[in-house]
Amino acid sequence: MPDFSRYKICSSNRVALLLLLAACLIALAGGHAQAQDSGGTSVARLALLPAPPQLAASSYLLLDAHTGKVIVEQGADQQLPPASLTKIMTAYIVSSELEKGSITHDDMVPISVKAWKMGGSRMFVREGTQVRLEDLLRGVIVQSGNDASVALAEYIAGDEQAFAMLMNQQAALLGMRYSNFLNATGWPAEGHLTTARDLAALARALVRNFPAHYKIYAEKEFSYNGITQANRNGLLWRDQSVDGIKTGHTEEAGFCLVASAKRDDMRLVSVVMGAKSARAREQETQKLLAYGFRYYQTHTLYTAGEEISSSKVWAGKAKTFPLVLSEDLSVTIPRGQRDALQAKIAVDKEVVAPVEEGTVYGQLNLVLGGELIAQRDLVAGAGVEQAGFFARLWDQIILFVRGILGLSD
Image (cartoon, rainbow, N blue to C red; front, side, top):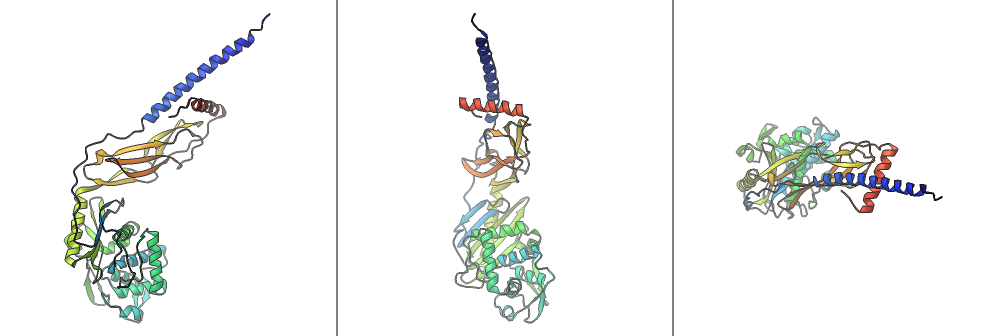
C-alpha cells in the first residue's frame, strides 16, 4: 500500500512557506512605506537678493558668528600685515590662560625695559613697576597699548618670541591657515601676516569661547596712571549694535577694523583691511554690517535631541527608534527663503539590534535652490536591546527572504 504521509508533509511545507512569504510581503510593504516618508519639503520661490557691496579696501569679509556662514568676501585669503589687529590674538591667549587658571586677573605683572620702551600706541606703564594683569588686558584691548602687550607676552611665555610661538600654535588650532605671527603687538616685521578670513575665525572664536572677556571690547575708554584714553573703534559711538572688536593701523597695513555687532538674535563679524583712513574703515564696515543684517537671517531649525525622523530596527525589543541631532542646527540664509529649504533625510537600511544611543544611523541634508548648505549626522536618540530568540529568528527569516527577493526599504 502506498505511503502518502510524505506528500502530506510536503503540502504542509508549501502552506507554511506561502504563509511566511505573505507575512514577509506585508512587512516589506510597511518598510517601503516608511522609506517613502523621508523626503524634502516643497520648493518655494526664492527671494530676490542684491549683490553685496564693493568696498574701498584691500580685503574684507563678513560672516555670521553663530553659524560661520560667510556672507560677503573679497580677497579674504590675501596675506596682509594686520597691524594692531594682532592684539586680538594676544588678548585671546591671555583670556585662554585666565580660563585655564594658570594666571589670574589680580596677578601683578612686572614691566621690563623692553615693554617700557615700546613706541606707537601705549598704555604708559613704567619700567620697574608691577601692574595688575586686568589693567594690562584693558590696556591692550581698549588703549591698544604696545607696552601692555609686550608685558603680558613676557609674563605668560617668558619673552615675546616664545609668546609668538604660542600665537602661531593657537592660530593652527583655530584653522587660521595663512597667519604667521612674529610679535604680540603687530609692530611691522617682514613675514608678520594674516588674512581677513583668519581674523574672522579668530574673532568668532573670541566671541563664542570667552563671552565674559569679550565685554571689555565694548568699553569706550580706560584710565591708567591718571591718563584716560578712548577706544579707537569709533563704531562704538556711531552704532549701538556694535560691541567690538579692534582697530589697527600702520603705513603698510593701512587702516583696518575687525568689528562685531548684534541685532536681535543675529551676530555678525566683519573684517576690513587696507582702508584709506580711520573714517573710511568705519564707513566700509558699516556697509558690510548693513547688508548682512538687512538681507540675511539666521534660523535655528532643529535643537539637539529633537526627533528628526525614525528608523526601523530588526530583531529588537522595539520596532523603531528616533533619529536626532547631537547639537542644534542653525543656518544663515537670505531673508524670505526659509520656506524654500528642503530637508532631505537618508537613513541606514537594515538596522539590526542592538542599537546604541548616539550611534550614527543617517544623515540630514539641507538644500536651498539646489545647493547643499548644511549636512549633519543623524544619531540614535535611544538605544534598542535585542529581542528574544524567537523574535530575532523571525526577523532574520524576513531579512533573508528580502535579500533573496532583492528588496529593501
